[in-house]
Amino acid sequence: MATTGKRFRSVSKKINHLHRYPVDEAVSLVKETATAKFDESVDVSVRLGVNPRHADQMVRGACSLPHGTGRQVRVVVFAQGDAARAAEEAGAVFVGSDDLVQKIQKEGWLEFDKAVATRNMMGKVGRLGRVLGPRGLMPNPKVGTVVAEDKVGDTVRELMRGKIDFRVEKAGIIHASIGKASMSAEQLGENLVALISTLLRLKPVSAKGTYMRSIAVSSTMGPGVKVDINDAQRAAERT
Image (cartoon, rainbow, N blue to C red; front, side, top):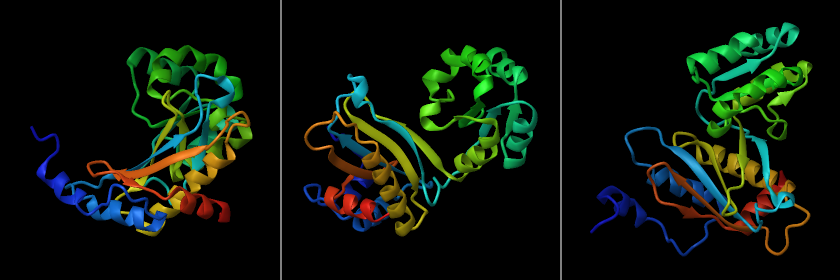
């Protein structure tokens, strides 16, 4: 029984699945094989030589993509006073304190993509851990979404421009979206290199052996394209 569709099998023939492509060729192939009727996301999977079961080998952080993710990001902010006004001016879709907590807790409102909180608000935001945590929406200082009051505006703008956060999974893999298929190959390539550069900087001191094991990019409905790790690392070192 066939496990893939005719379209998928057709575009897969354009890729040598045993070959590792330079970054620019890999993203060009992803664009070429993104033939769905909607603007597909371009995703990357990076397998790292770490054991996430050990706390000192957990890789987690955030990366500002130079060309954004290609989609509108809705940001809410838990803040008061001047910080709340700065968040509104920066373009947050909703800014509040107890009212925002109640809106999420009692009304089940979750029509946003990112949440930011000032440090003095975390006592209240902590009550939403069971709601926001499983959805990856909980503000966290490790990914830059718990900030000082004077940093709120800048943080909101960064997130709206395409700042992404990531966390290594149990299998040692990082999954992230680096843009849309409608973006240029150059833009997607630079976004990918920015992510690789960030991952290299976050290499745990305790990680032994080869740190970056494999990199693959794909569109939402397209086949995976393996990336030449050495080419990606050289590009990252130049940034």
